[in-house]
Length: 253
Ligand code: NDP
Image (cartoon, rainbow, N blue to C red; front, side, top):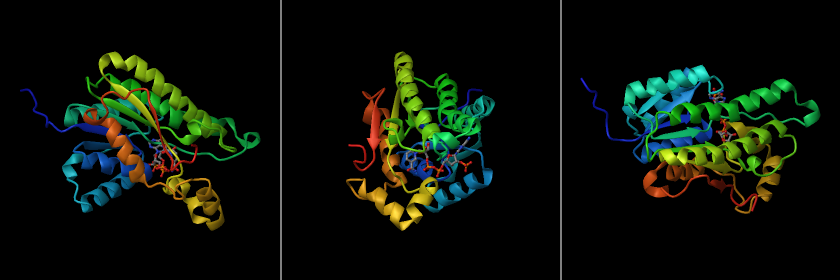
């Protein structure tokens, strides 16, 4: 018998258990999406779901899927699980990412490979595998960074991965346009998350950063989530593809 799936849209958010990914998941749930959180840490994802339920989101609209984004095999398995559960994928948000902060002279091949494999190749796997299941009107949003548009000292691996992700976004937008799938990148500036806790917890360092931001504050995960929800939704951004949206309080203006 043919299975009946609900009409609401389905999104995958990688690294959705904390930080920006959590903010994105929340904003997508508010827009009426069902959200599959892809992550490595079952306990972290269970805790995130508990938090979302406390915020009054329906537990049945959230699904935790174990997936290390740097593994193509994990991606295949995770996407199949979502298809089995909800029967479709309307949006993919490639958010999972890691940061290594070292001068080039100290950056090892392992550092370079780890960062590129997670931030860039992980997103490539997501685009390749999800786009095969996506229909006209679907959207992919890649979370790059202002470090994908401008160089920052001590971030050689990270900047390389994020510049690469901006390039990948544009190529995917060109190739997937004929299928009616839109692909955009969001470039956050300084956002208050576990990734930036070193910056945010040192008064002098934090102040120096804030002085470089015209709006003089760090962004919140929801600042990014609102932009992603707009780009993920065909009703609000049907003519946007191949775009790069900076959300940085004016940092690189
Ligand atoms: P966090 O470190 O708080 O969260 C990163 C998330 O990615 C975690 O859930 C982590 O899961 C997940 N993750 C990392 N590696 C993998 C992997 N191999 N497979 C699956 N999940 C993985 O970072 P943010 O929320 O700050 O960052 C989110 C994205 O935004 C990143 O791509 C980052 O580069 C980008 N960004 C962040 C900025 C900021 O100021 N915070 C600025 C610009 C861009 P786990 O618990 O398993 O580690």
